[in-house]
Amino acid sequence: MKKIFKDDRYAWLFAIVSVVVIFITHHYVPFMMDDNWYSTVLSSDQPIRNFSDIVNAQIWHYNNWGGRSMTHSLLQCILLTGETAADVLNTLVTVLLAVIILLTGDSLNVKKSVSNLVLKITAVVALLVGMNANWKMSMFWESGAANYLYITCFILVFINTYLRALDVKKDLTLVSLWIIPLGIISGWSNENMGPVALLVSVATMIIVYKRHEKIKLWMILGSISSLAGSIACIVAPGNFVRSAQDNSHNVGIIWKLFLRGYSEMRGLVSYLFPALFITVVMYALLKLVAKEKVTLKEGILLICALLSWGAMVLSPHYPDRASFGTMTFLFCVCVSWCERIVKKNPEAKNPILIGLLFIWLRAMFFCCEFIAMSKGWII
Image (cartoon, rainbow, N blue to C red; front, side, top):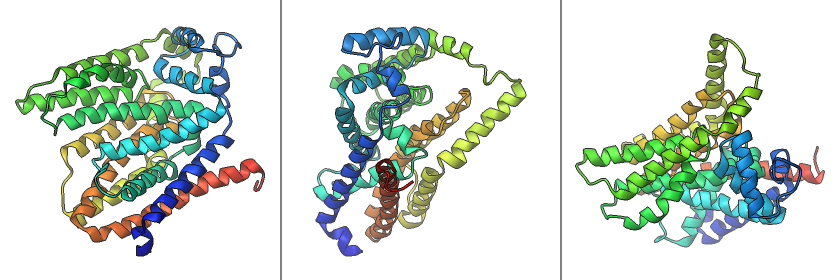
């Protein structure tokens, strides 16, 4: 077992197998349900043909169905490329999200061997699929991928920019050039993750102020743009039109509170349980093996996970795929703890890798089982 982990060739083998299996899985997950509708101009059955059609479709959508304009604009752009191109994009973005999680968790050390980095990325990809409450609908279904896989990349980059400002003392002036569009996209994304990004930007500025340090211009601009995006998402006329049509939760306040509480607990002990289990195990190793405390950045990310989970109490529906963002926050903390544990006690690396190997096998089983069912090999 030790030889496998020390041989660079095996890191690349795991990575190649993962990418190929994920791409093939994407190939067999068809455009379905919302994909079919968002492939049109929405107000009619006319297929989208260009970017102008997408703009017109999103104006109609904003006024008649919902406010997640950034997410659904992205979805329509993906659908416009065609199924094969979408499969390639989704596979690449899965790897990209793994890289961003490592970056947010301070585990993206490019100075070490490339194979070590490849192994880390493969491990995070395995976590995203193997520990996911609904891997198919949050990562492989086109509409789900746009809402969760793609948007989480934007949100984590936005949050990571602020978290790094707590350590980096340099005046990152150039950040002002892209923090505004990034803030708008992050805020104008989905109902539970967008506000969390805003709160992190505000919390970072408060911490900087408490340290008697200068609050940078880009911090203010990013926070304002995120707030503007969140407001635009929430106050969309289409949200009220859609809510007026939903009578499924037209019940008394007591019963409504019960249903919301039940939904939250199901999210915690069902949807998020695998990710929470990994988090608890890594925390135990951090305290027992590394004998270290949770850092400020890790604490903020844990609060982000708590808030993104808790925010769903405001929604009448908590689908399992909505736990995706919360899961990624937990994984950011886990990879940070893993890096510190191995650095403090190198002997802990192999047991951790063995655990990750089982998670990788679970992720590959899910995908391969779906492929086999799609091919008719199993029923």
